[in-house]
Amino acid sequence: MDIAEAAERFDELIDLVLRSDEVVICRAGDPIAAILPISQKEQGTWDEVWALVAKGRPVNNDQTLNHDELYDENGLPK
Image 1 (tube, rainbow, N blue to C red):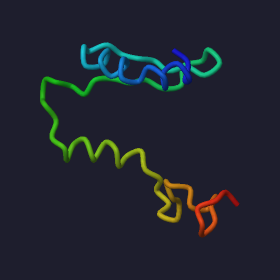
Image 2 (image 1 turned 120 degrees about the vertical axis):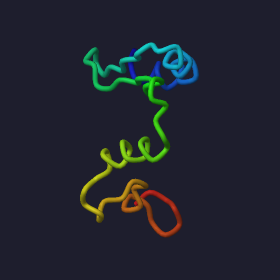
Image 3 (image 1 turned 90 degrees about the horizontal axis):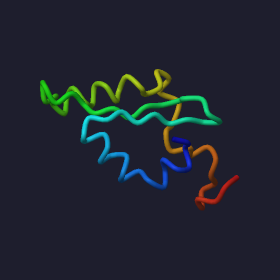
Image 4 (image 1 turned 60 degrees about the vertical axis):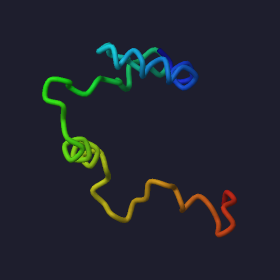
């Protein structure tokens, strides 16, 4: 599924994942990401989930996730 279609049908994709299906997201026909169900066998704790999320965060603490460097003090693009 391409990115635009995935964005439009995100709720449906989550329903598929809840049924233990895997959803692959593509850009220009090339797979770039997958949405997978969290293993239901062990019922992971929130601490385990947040640890997985933290693995994807930038190591450099100077980097931001909200892109403040792109906007001025009034919230308008620079």
